[in-house]
Amino acid sequence: MELRVGVLAVDPSSPFSGGALLGDRVRMQEHATDPKVFIRSMASRGHLGGLAWATPQAVRVLDAAGCDIVLVETVGVGQSEVEVAGAADTTIVLLAPGMGDGVQAAKAGILEIGDLFVVNKADRDGAETTLRELRHMLTLGSGPRSGPVDDPWKPEVLRTVAAKGEGSEDVVEAVLRHREWLERSGELASRRRARAAAEIEAIAFGILRARIGDLRGDQRLDSLADRVATGGLDPYAAADTLVAGLSL
Image (cartoon, rainbow, N blue to C red; front, side, top):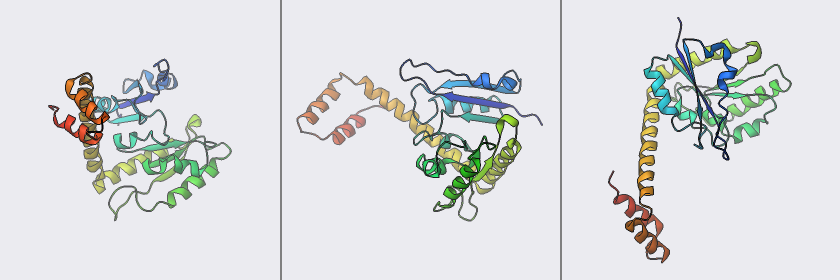
């Protein structure tokens, strides 16, 4: 069965020029003209979390367009670029030898967001050490990251050599196993509800932020600022007053 695949590749925008390379299609020349594959590069445009602001909406568009699978690549995962965990059904964390020890992996927060962990370039020196440290760090968790207590998902650690095509099938099979678990445990519906709620909340915050921004120079905001500056009102009460006066 042939599947339609959508790829959203998010690249960081320069904080100086605002531009982004968006060269992912260059790396995917084999599929760039495939009629069953749609590749869209997106610039983060300063949005934090590892994704672009429009990424969730783009995922919804690709789903509505008939894509069976949507792959979302982030700008990279650090201590705060973990927004993809809330935007995807299955989160795959890709590592490579020589990228730091197990302590660095835990420090970056990747142990909390990954459903699958893949060590690429597994034919290089240090790959076994990376695999061993990653598996050890995962055993130190206090409990399952998600799912029911009687049927938790235990993150898998896999190895690949992408340049040689080695291990790719194992990753696909692991993703299918995770999908089966998501449906069986009810976690799929739970994650999608949480995702929808987070998206609604983010949009609402954006609307609220824009309306507060429109008040700059407004008499109400100036009056509250004067009271806070003179000690007649604390900023929290002023913010409550300001929000209560906004028409949503």
